[in-house]
Length: 196
Image (cartoon, rainbow, N blue to C red; front, top):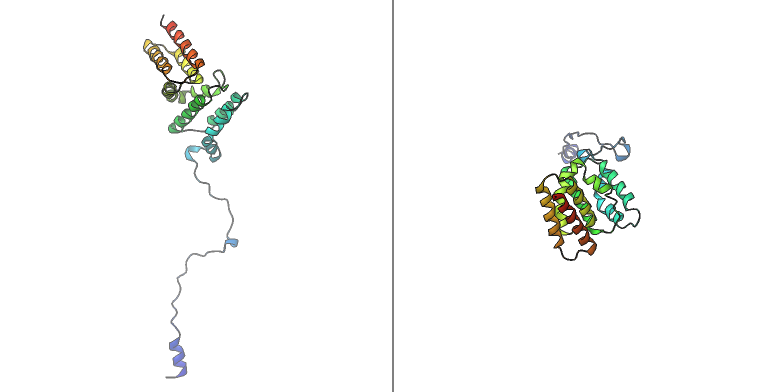
């Protein structure tokens, strides 16, 4: 066998490579605006971040001696700017009620921006049963203020009976302050006047 033939046999046969899509090095790739991820329910991510910081904002407001109302207005402004789903509204309402319970001596206003937000049409039907349940488990002055406004809006004897029983039930809770007891007894007196 000739040397030329040996050289030909020793070389592996080359198959044509399949050409894939052209990939440019990282530095050569065109730089364009990044695609934004879709926003959930039209809520901007910055506002959603603040929504998840609601608990911290309520704690900060409750710990203030003079600025609780001012900070409460900031919180309600943020909440009003967000299109909340019903489960999110429930979560927000529960957080607000827990803040009223955790900081009973804070000056939340009379009744204050948080109560006004809870009384908005989209929130009221959700807030009423939640506030009643939370009040019976752990009475708080500002939830009593909310219930007082419900008493004032009551139009039937059955509604008055419901709130009468609610305050009596809350009076049985152990460890509540004397000021809270006085508040509930005052509400019961006003309720009895409504029956007349």
